[in-house]
Structures are given as C-alpha cells and as structure tokens.
Image (cartoon, rainbow, N blue to C red; front, top):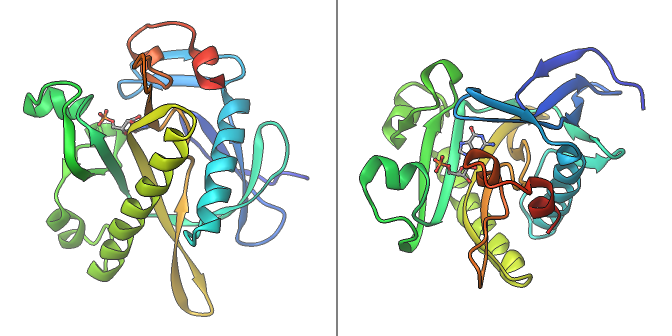
Amino acid sequence: MNKGKKLYEGKAKILYEGPEKGTAIQHFKDDATAFNNQKKTIVEGKGVLNNRISEHILNNLNQIGIKTHLIKRLNMREQLVRLVSIYPVEFIVRNIATGSLTKKLGIPDGTILSKPLIEYSYKNDELGDPLIAREHILEFSWIPQAVHLDMINDYCFRINDFMQGMFRAVGIKLVDFKLEFGTVNINGKTEILLADEISPDTCRLWDVISEKKLDKDRFRKDLGNIIQAYQE
Ligand code: 5GP
C-alpha cells in the first residue's frame, strides 16, 4: 500500500497519510526513548513486536465493543488506521503502585491498589507530560465535553478489566498502562476512538511468579534482554 506524505513523527512511531481520506498509516520504529527523550537507543525488532502486540490487543478490544482507530495491520511494521484528532491527554490506569506514582507520592513500590486508579497527564513534551486533574481537562477544553471524559473513564476501566484477564491467562500481571483517545466525525457526530498503541512500550507487565519485568522498564532501568522480554 502506497504511503502518502509524513504527517507526524513521534519517538516510536511515524504517521503517514493513508490511501483514502480519513485514514493514516502508522509505522512502528525500533527507537526506544525514555525520560522525555533524554535516554535513547535502537532496539532491533521492537517495532515489529509492538505492531503485532498492539494489533492483537486492539482487535480483541474491538470485539468487546471498544471502538479503536485500527483498520488492519498491513505488514511487519505498519498498520492502516483511522486518522483521529487526538485529545492532548494521556490516560494512565494503575493496578499496582510503581513508577511515577511511587516517586511522586512516596507510596511503597508494589502496593496493590484497592481498585484501579486513573490518572491524567497533559500531553506536552516541553512540560514533561505533567499530571493534571479532571478540572484542568475541562477548564482548558482539552476534552471539551464532560460527558466525553466520563465515557473515556468508563472505557479505561473496561479496557483494564479485559486486559488484566488476557494477561493473567498467560501468567502476566498488568501493573499499569497508558491510553490515548481521539475523535472522528461521522455524519456530523463525534465518535471517540481508542488510538495510538497498546504494547510493552506503553504498559508495565510483570511475570506473575517471578515479577520479572516484561516491558519498557527493562530499557528505562538498564535491565537488558529487552527484545526477549517483549517476545515473552
Ligand atoms: P509512569 O507514570 O509510572 O511513568 O507510567 C505509567 C504507565 O504509563 C507506564 O506503563 C508507562 O509505560 C506508561 N506511560 C506513561 N507516560 C508514557 C509516555 O509518554 N509514553 C509511553 N510509551 N508510555 C507512557
């Protein structure tokens, strides 16, 4: 499938114009970055794995009624997706306290949360994606309608329930993950779609028994064997 012009290049993906209006081609790179681009490397084969893993998860979510931007995987590194207008908010869902939650609030690492916790960050590299409140999102119209924010919160819980079960079945704990949503306009009606990717780049995944990290923390914390962990 012929790619159109480059629309956007992010840290781990490139978005090209798609073959039809309203579509795009999402290309998964091997670049790994952390700490707001301060740490960088190439992890050979990561893009291929993330393309596959994200395809699998988004297809499964589609089947439980979560609408996503994914149309189909095209090849080893590319997906055909709907071109969405992304809300500038990252939705972080947590089941176990680790990462920035423990650093910011001093909660002991590994604390099991009594129920899933949703956090919001403002998608802004210059500001380092700061943690924000629901009130900021509405006040600054990052998501203009409260009802849409409520719908997305509900999707986050449903996605978490589904993914926890899916990973648990293969011996993996879903610790936390990041989601992005956007909108498309269909016959004058705004529809919310899950966008971006869900992969070990955007989730924390621990082996149920050994608690071995099977995600991007292997890169963030210099634990090695990144590709083996993503394959697992
Ligand atoms: P934390 O806030 O603890 O750093 O991250 C929480 C979860 O969200 C982790 O699974 C992490 O991978 C994911 N996450 C948060 N922000 C980003 C981001 O900007 N990019 C990616 N790829 N993942 C993120």
